[in-house]
Image (cartoon, rainbow, N blue to C red; front, side):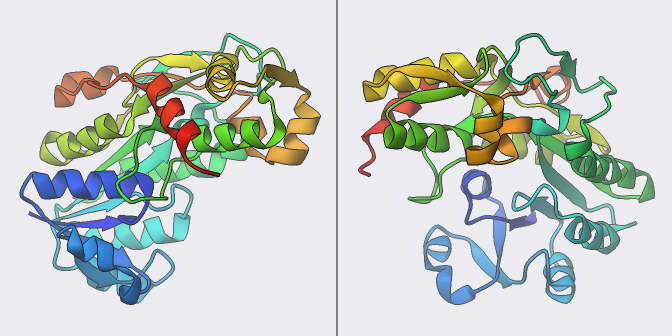
Length: 298
């Protein structure tokens, strides 16, 4: 099968693309500038020019492939609609990447929060409603003769496929702690997020491509952790204290992510992904990855 990976130069997309190449699949990376794609070609990816903002280029890149994976932007509604129109009635596969902030609450650092699995119906907070609508549109498109799925990713950690293309949360929190001399968490730090290693995430995509069900939602995860616990790990590794700070201060410095990520609960359980895909996490190394990040020169 020929697979188009959108976002192959990024953290999730890079891991997925290399995993599919090891599977023996032909992987095409959608890139804006082919002149900057040398490392992708060296890794065995072919190159297609385009982006989620380029309707004509995107549709052209989709035409010869049997599957499309969007690992570039969970919130690009216009690009997703282009993909859905291009594959409508073709039987082609589309796997869209979402993230569990879509099911985050407004805990402001407090514990609790609902535990949800792939069968749970929930109402997103207003700030994540647009993302939730995209996820529902992708899944609903299966009724139009396409094999569409959503993989909703948790906090992801691990060594990136491409040097310098790190994940989001852990690298940011380590950098912030190093810069300010304190590993910070919001409020009581009891809010919890699910997590998984990037290698297990890439395995989830490969499994979904091989045998995922049309219209499915999948939650890959390997347990959960509180933001305060993460801060304590980071503090120990860097030799700085862990400490709380007020939500209003966090919003000013960290922006909206302080609301729907660093102070929220997003507690998922991947029951369907285990049942449908026979998937299960194999790597449990969040502390080891904090050590890796702490050792990266400033």
